[in-house]
Image 1 (cartoon, rainbow, N blue to C red):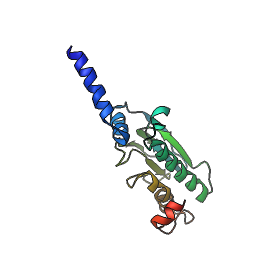
Image 2 (cartoon, rainbow, N blue to C red):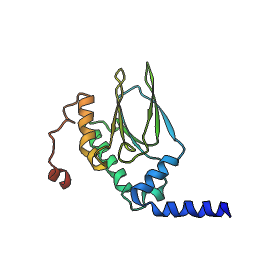
Image 3 (tube, one colour):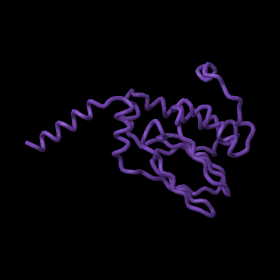
Image 4 (cartoon, helix red, strand yellow):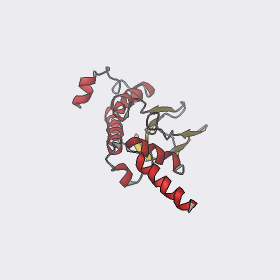
Amino acid sequence: MLRNFIFYSSIAIAFSCSGMALAERLLSQMPVKQVSIKANKPLVIGFFPPLSREEINSGDGTAEALHHLQFALEDISKCMNDKKITRLEFTRRIILHTKDHTHKINILPDWNRGALGAVLIQPGKKPRVEYATGGASFLIHSLPQAAGEYFNDPKCKSEKKTADEEHER
């Protein structure tokens, strides 16, 4: 009887959570999936939580967040004129092997503080992690800007856009 109570209580709790709160809860309970990457050239690795297709397409904004990250990575590829510089990983931990160091980058499970973003990598330079702290749509401007600064590439640097200009995209 106690087992049934616990089971039905957890179902009730799961149904009482909605939208991003449920996604955050699922993320925090997931086993940590990690990827190991050998970085011997400039790279921008976008990271997104390792969710199932059903979770991504649940209608709570997760699919849109993924699209914003993909748009930002495409913009970096265009402004740096290198289609192979970017890649997307569905992970919560990145083990980055450079010539001199191994870096472990743990990705936070909290949607508001960094469940998605990107790692900028230049051999001989400390990796830079950019989180979507301003929301997923913020990445469309912030990631190319960060890439321009990190890789010292003026083609990726841009003037700050107004909120209206961002929404026109």
